[in-house]
Image (cartoon, rainbow, N blue to C red; front, side, top):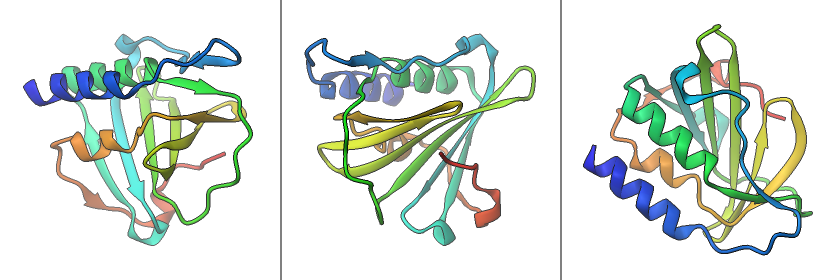
Length: 150
């Protein structure tokens, strides 16, 4: 629990102050109370993908709150190829899923795609760090188990 609090504070401190032109926060179209679980997927090469499954309420709230606090901008960026990908796959109370996909550009930026949104958003927050901060043990997954990305 202390580690999640420390991570929350660290991520919040990494969020730069951004001018208001075309910048917004990630808006998830559901409440944290609707989340039954979150599967985190991470890979640089899809054949080497790993997954962590989060089910405890404090983990779900922490990921939800951290993602909801991240600033994103509709800014043109070069397509990212060969970078690390982290997918947050939310399973909701009605058994539907909602995915947030982060591709890291380098340590200073990345791109975010969300279910039902064709826009690729720019962020200067390293969302990949949430994968490494989770103490849940990872397991290997096959490529066909990975959620579809935009």
